[in-house]
Length: 384
Image 1 (spheres, rainbow, N blue to C red):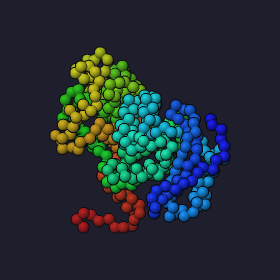
Image 2: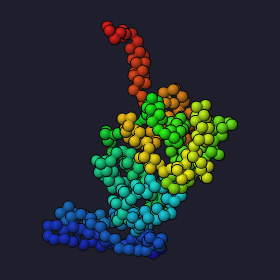
Image 3: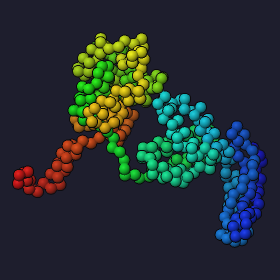
Image 4: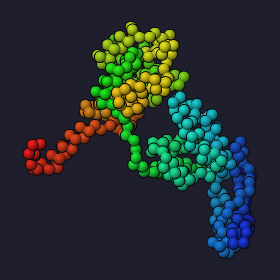
């Protein structure tokens, strides 16, 4: 590292008459992309001459900038841009995530963050910059997208901080803008699930039956093998996932779980095993070639046409997981039970994102509340 020494910097004015500004210049240690530390010249506009009328005032502002450098309080900052670090992060860190998580972060990174911050130095992106960016994004995107952008930026900067390129994470302290036009999450009621099941043909009928009874993720269903199905003990073990060409581990520790098999589900799986397609990979739900399905292909080719025929809103496979969570809640089953069935790491996830309130349940709850709040109010019949 270059030897630290006291410096006063230099001041000069720049610009035409009436538009002149004070410019400060000093030397500062920086971290190069290769990790080496070098001394470089920095300059910054302090303000217009009309706002800072005297050189003494400009010198006072420059001294406040140089004080942490002269006292050795400021660490060398990285010259690496966000775009350059994003490429390194994509090559070094993303491969350690599951395939679906890897694709998710990569999409958010390139569609939103790199487009905006590619040329920014890592050390020049601060919380207000991120806040203003998300405020602008809120005009076009749903709150969930804003949440994902903030989460991806936070993960990226967490790695940059571990590498010593930055001292703080600009995503910390960023508030998500409020937005009222939020699309409701689609959940199927039991009669709708039954109609979907009846409209499908095998093997998709059994696949939806398993999804609607167990709440398994579609990637878990595609990775399910007959060796995971224990007919003797009537158990189904979730051990792996399949997503876009590769097998992987379940999403988290609680996702690797054992699900009891109900009598009806056992009968359907037994019949599917004897009459369904055979696979050299021992898959429960192989495609025509004996390989795992691709979720997007099956969604557009099988599920969406059935939903359109029944007049149901277009949605994805996750709607069956929400339906399971909601049905268990309506049955007054403990949240812990739903969490274990769905394989969530936290019951808060089950409650916040998967359990949807049913209108009739709300009506009954309001009626009970009314009786508690106003026990002496006369009750009127409909014909009164």
